[in-house]
Picture 1 (cartoon, helix red, strand yellow):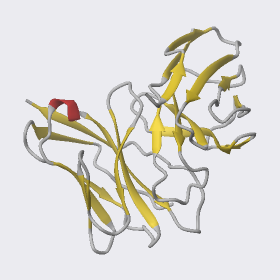
Picture 2 (cartoon, each protein chain N blue to C red):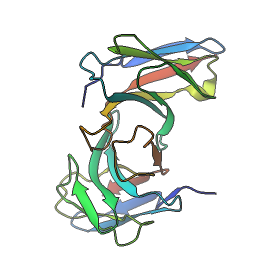
Picture 3 (tube, each protein chain N blue to C red):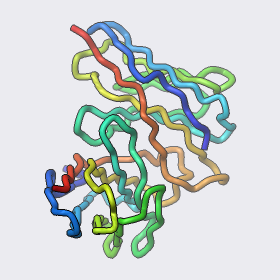
Length: 117
Length: 113
């Protein structure tokens, strides 16, 4: 079945450590996204990529980094510069890299929950 | 992109219709209305979207007022599994914008047995 796979589902990290969250999709979608969600809050956009080898900062990119070397993969690294990294991280994809299409709906993964000890 | 206003929470009896309102008074002519929902600790799920006309699919109906300043998502026969946070989002289509969706806090719908 086509979909988005995020791993790991749960991750614990010590302060000062970098950690990389994996996101893989087999939907042949052009665009991929990373959102962060804190308890009781909506989703906030970290980074997005509309095409391979290109990505853009979202609203809260500080302390995060991404790469888009392959169409199907969009890993997110949470660096030690991120002051409050404990959160639920969601990866998504959409068929078009051009967001102006009204049919450009998002498909989300199941999420990765990061806890900093 | 136009901002949206949704009530923070709503209750609905199981088997009854759930009507979730969304105000988007600053919406412009080329902005679509999208609805997603998020069941606890899962990724959001797309429900439906529309521009001007009312839309219906196997999950829900979307009613957009004639002036497009508000819309209502209707779940015709709510079940316990419909308990979730529902997000209403408006975003520019056409040639004016090329930005990702922005999610607010949504409406927490509780379906009660």
